[in-house]
Image (tube, rainbow, N blue to C red; front, side, top):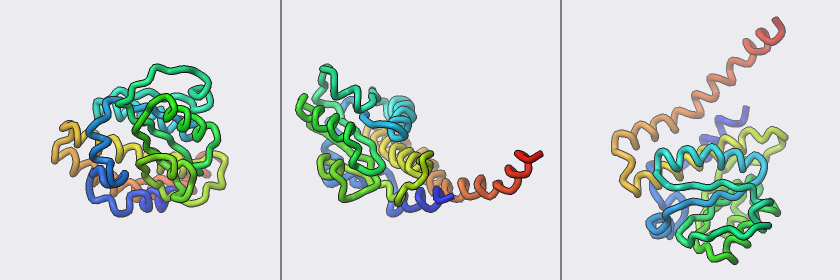
Length: 202
């Protein structure tokens, strides 16, 4: 039930799909990359797996998703033009931090964190970041962490699509309008709780 507010906070200040949302040098970095390597664990991994569909279909960027705890124990072929994208609610996930460090050692130059904590190690270790502003997650299901991560990943997808000439002005306006409506749409679904309880008891 905290999801509408969390997503609204995640979208605060978003007036369009600009690289500046992700950091001062994001425009330069996004202009150089030709692939994305997503590293994450648990719920954040599932957000990354969902985003792969968007990044490839909408932005046209080849995207690989790997569980961080496995990535750090193999010797992958390195594309120095790939963006290493790490996702974490806390920004302190040990396996993901270790995978990020390993990716840098392998020669990856560009990194981006999608994270909830501005002061976390992950945000400090990456050159770019986007804060989800989900607040403290106390549920094992990690719902608001997941949906705010998806929101941030969709913003990234549309930003990259725009840079690559794959997002028309009309499509941009439509996507922005739909994102603005998302908290209201979620609240409408959550308002069905009494009916759902009644159906479940029937």
